[in-house]
Image (cartoon, rainbow, N blue to C red; front, top):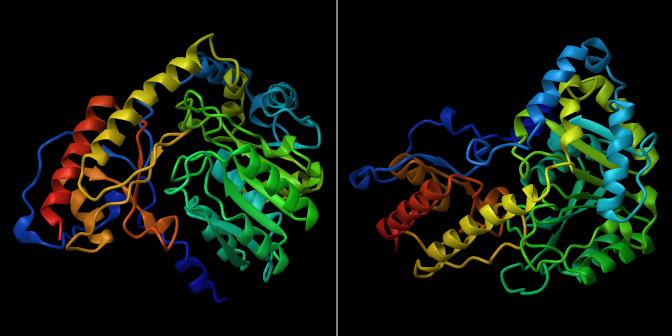
Length: 403
């Protein structure tokens, strides 16, 4: 793959925050009557609508006061902070985390994902990837010239599972895939893998000696009655699992750019070597904010989840009131992935019209799967009233362009 092709595949047209760079391209100017209302960007969460973890800024400023000792940590992160995180993550996931050799602090979970894929995939490697799933998974594997073996997840028709086609996953392993990459809870659909699915993924990975990278960014933001099973606590070789988490979306701490990856020592060591070249370390002062992670005041997380659940329920009700629209109720996280009815314009043109005519920014479903052209993704971690009003405008635009 030549260098131009490699970077062309990394297109950022629909990346969060990039809409300001797009030229106006409304598909039907005769019907471009603007709908009044507060603009809402559903491509990412609103950290102003949901305040960050108490004490986060104070931890940051205290680190600034410390100065160089905090600014220039080990490449894999401050040893005392890693030790505290290892204990907390051990309790959370149900399996031991090695602070010294099995954990690295990264510049955001996106940074952790990049490092983990770079540490496990090289040209020609076959990689099993879920469809739909986080868009960067596909882009990173393609960038490192791996071969994608897709595994379908029929989330819409499932009720008590994610709907992963486990037979397809085994077929991918039989075809030579030695790495499986997925998010749980799933981004974009917000579904949680059942205990049976996670157990089967672990069994298949063990049978075929495959490495698994699991993005668990939203595993703390789970709604009432939704169980969660950690892959690393199953019957799978610890050295073959890398788990990625971080205090970003759920805790409204995205601006500090913090991620954590923990798992097999060999892979973590490779990740550190690459981080030493790419960024040296996660920002030293920001690392101190991790002291507040898993140490929130009593009841804080429960209140955060309850606030998101109210928004989730209201938006799901609105989407289900649109004739021909379907959406599964997310079990965790802050994403909705509704499928819209047939429209008179292309899905990408509708996304453009929605932004220009209604002030509502969403991400097209094709970013997450080629089979999801009629779907859109919304991060509903927003101001409640503004989010409801925005989806109401979206419903109006659906009627404007309905076939």
